[in-house]
Image 1 (cartoon, one colour):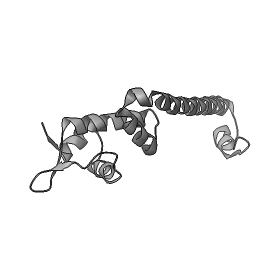
Image 2: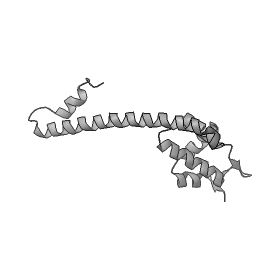
Image 3: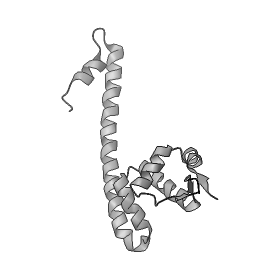
Image 4: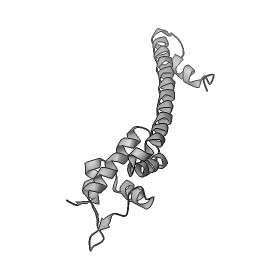
Length: 133
């Protein structure tokens, strides 16, 4: 079964421009075109695109995804490299979680201070305070 670019875009919830870009940067191999030049995506193409989307949700950059796609061709041989890449991504995510937790706690405190404040706005003052930057 072959799908047109618009159908793929709708199915995967990405723009047609994104699909064209992936092809341009060779994240996706040259997509088959019909006689009129319309891109037609195969199930293999869709599988690759789903892999890309999932990897993006995990925080991998397009360059890292390109590496993962190459590793996908021979997973057993690439396993140590994939593990190392995933380990670094996990460390990045952990760092971001710590930053988000700090921001959440700070915003929670400022929100509580705001409800008790009779003058000024602790939230705006807290955002304006650059001691955390």
